[in-house]
Image (cartoon, one colour):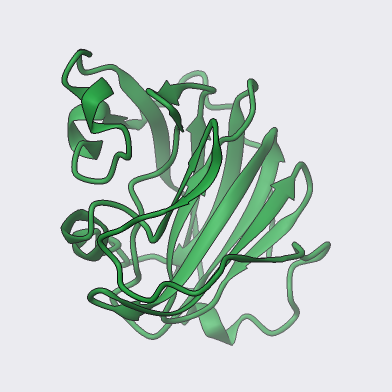
Length: 196
């Protein structure tokens, strides 16, 4: 699977604004006192191969009040996963499995430049920029996937928030397991059937 740090300067991204994140943000008090800034940028369908699309997402360093900037969070509509590659910066990739308020499994991976992050089928996921530098990452995912955000919207975010005070459980979930940490991969897996 090809990984390329494409020049994005002449491309127009989809932009995620703060207003679209209000349902999933931790610091609701801060939200009431701010405008509607751009949070992150999504460059979709940069390449297509074998029914998969190649995207790049850029998440500048920002704070959402006391919470570090993050993606909205989604789960894939079908029984397939995704592959991320950290092109620049670093990020936390948070994965959760379950339904409604019940979480069966939750873990995070701290990825840095060059690391490969595998999203297993059936896991919702959020990416967080915990640093003062831009996070730039690429992904390969099923070309037709649009991502389902409704679980995260309904539960007001993932089952954990990452804040200036560290990891905080989202109290809208019940019986959330303790967060564990896994290591990133150093190479793209040979078997990519989980993407289809």
